[in-house]
Image (cartoon, rainbow, N blue to C red; front, side):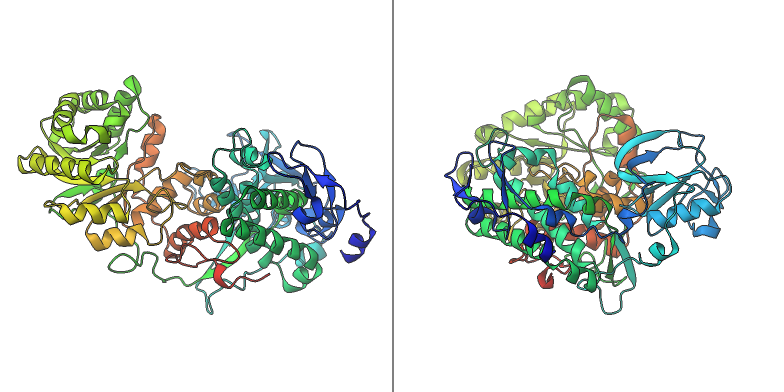
Length: 618
């Protein structure tokens, strides 16, 4: 690498890079690479790494480079005919069934594309193979029919095999900085693919042109994505063998540099520090794209019985019954019970809201959530009426959404009751806090409705700890329910706070209802697309949506998945017939540290450092 750098021509130091909407800054100052050149492909010129960095981390002995017969970005679907469903025990299969025969499958877990190809060569009838690095799964095929482009896969023929020397050199690396002294389980995670995925998010691209560029509406959210990308990159290279890291010390210096650039932005958030971080990170990720696509998963070692939910009384995941979605119920602090799996109706309108409510009740949901702001209370009420499910079996919740109407809450409440076609609500809540005076006036009206029996339980939504403290100071009837954003990147609030919202709610006797568990809003990272989430879901044979909702349930929260698609509604109802292991719950809970931490600061401080970021050194 040093020799390659010496061979690179040095550009004239006076040559500037033009930063859109910013002053002109020399490339050398902005990019800080030892050698650099101006790249004028866009109005906001990026400083590019030279060819030396492109060559790094792509040594010919890597799995990505054997031999030319591999087809990256291709998958061979079995299209109902061409999957090779046979006894694969001889090549290490330990999963799957074909029809009623559990000795037959067309897929199995294996370490690399090379081993997948070797397995194909050993099974009669196998002519082609497809490998998905993100979940380390090999699929065997009779034909290449069903060929599709998909960057998540690598495919090849029976004859496309690595040499014995190549196979022996591809042992999966362990992430020593994360391994417990005597780990009970080792879980392979595709950090490299997660890093690349985050760096290429379409929502991120407008901000590559700088703060104020068209479409760059939330620069802080964009930098949160870069934090996630760079932390995954750091974990991917930390998982390489020590001798390989030593060979690529120059590249590691660049990774350390962009990690520092991102940390600098969060310490000094200016247009200039934003552009420095984004330009340098983009250049490095462009240079490493090939390696990131093909890098093997990294094994993380974890104790099998470490508590995954320290905020709960046992410290371990909540125990849930099996059955229909209405089977799992939680006790509210006022003595009532609530189904933990509800059906959300946000963004469902008109006939769609009516049809979806009917489909949800038919699928076994017994908790329906709506709101004044959703504009669908009438259709939800008609769906409940026409479902044939007795009103007494349904937990019905709605909200007053407009703080301007807090002083006239009782009038609005009566209109909502009429629209829903009911004479009482199981739960009524404030959709968001207003100012102190209007919030107190609204709460007093809700307490009166509670005393009259028109509302069984009181709750709030989109309240943070400070909002709750203010409410609790004057409430005569305490809220028993808190509906907040809950996802792996925002576990309890729209913006991650200085204390765990789940722990705070547990202390206050509030049941947490998580909304938008699978929705990227208000940030950019889409959890259902995250390769780390998808790799965990793949091991359970479940959809990312099911795994993410199950994660929230095991943390003791309730969930309100929503969809207009009857098949998705039914899929989201199947959350009680499988269980995530404690290590997997911990890994999912730890994703927030990848999106919130920098190389200099671990955040949130209350989170489980499951990936070892506090001590991670390259």
